Image 1: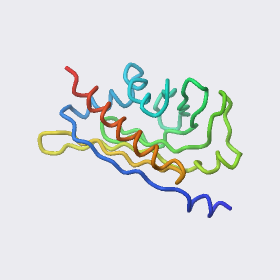
Image 2: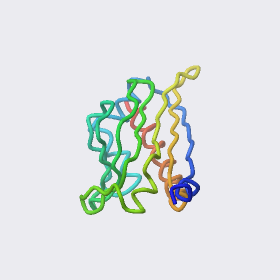
Image 3: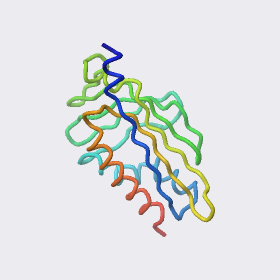
Image 4: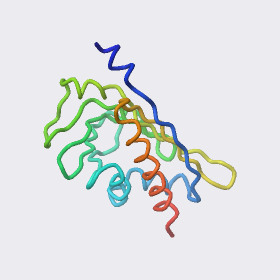
Length: 154
């Protein structure tokens, strides 16, 4: 059964050029004053709850109380941030064992920040279930645009 679940996964890979420092982009990715503004592109009121320290839990939830549970597996400030999904959240309750929760377990959300000539590149690589690929792909396009806008604000 796990093999069937893994086969139904797809990976979103996107990159955007931003006229801002790696430090500023990192701030937009991790600071509570910015994260709700771009996570809202995924669902109404979406935001992460975490310290972003390696090994810490991340709750990605929205106004419905639903979302994802993950763990920060890499935190290299201004360079790389990676979260591995552990399960889902339904109505504020964490779920690690249902079939839906198992379908996201082990998927990763990774951000890389790289200097590129006179700009900085933010790339994301996100594992998702095949059924959500199109909607998540579109949401990531919007989210990256919002991250760029926030990072380039003076």
